[in-house]
Image 1: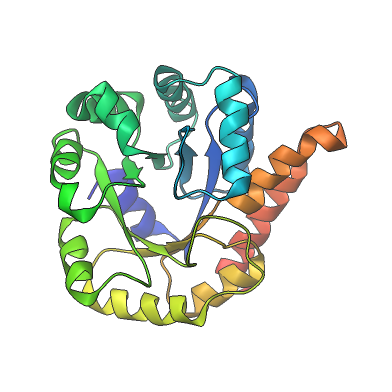
Image 2 (image 1 turned 135 degrees about the vertical axis):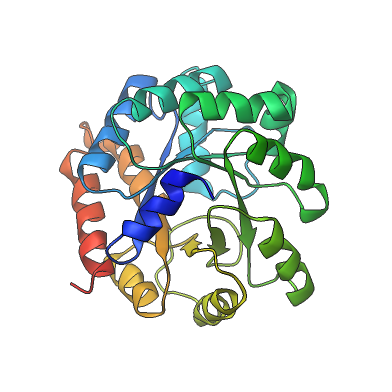
Length: 266
């Protein structure tokens, strides 16, 4: 396991809060400032999403953010520039969320080397099936990057065991069926899956997809989650700034702080 990721879980007081930001949304400079706000609010880890033209795992909120970022000129080189700038200001683990086409187009080994050079600690490739994951996982480990893999409610037990054997850093537990997005309620099946996966791996298990409120975080914390990934709820605040005529201000930080409090039983 990457040392920063392992250390974060080892030293964390309760489940880690892992907010997401879309690289370049709505501009490079503003996404850098938003990353600072998330870190300053107490993020334990940060997921930086690379916008893609066909983001099959993402719901409308993150798709719209990706469209804004691509319109503003976000590229893979600029993604690594952003990671490098965030790394210069914080010691928390940094994750990149991307898609296979982006990695393959750059060259699998080169992508992971560049990610490591920029200061990333883990990479999630959202659309790589288990059968094609080996070259990605191997290149990640060669570069000192943790390959973060998904387990979902539809993953068969046999397939789940294979994923747990290949994964590094932590297990990304897909907490809701379908794509990313804000949900009102948690799926009881996701709690059941969390318990099953935790019995089968020594890696931390971190739910994502649909986690939108401090109460969601509290329930996962009570169920034994090692962290939670929060994307659409935060990214929607960034998108709303256009209609509001101002930036997200303290709302992003307030939500992260509230979630941290909930994760610790507050």
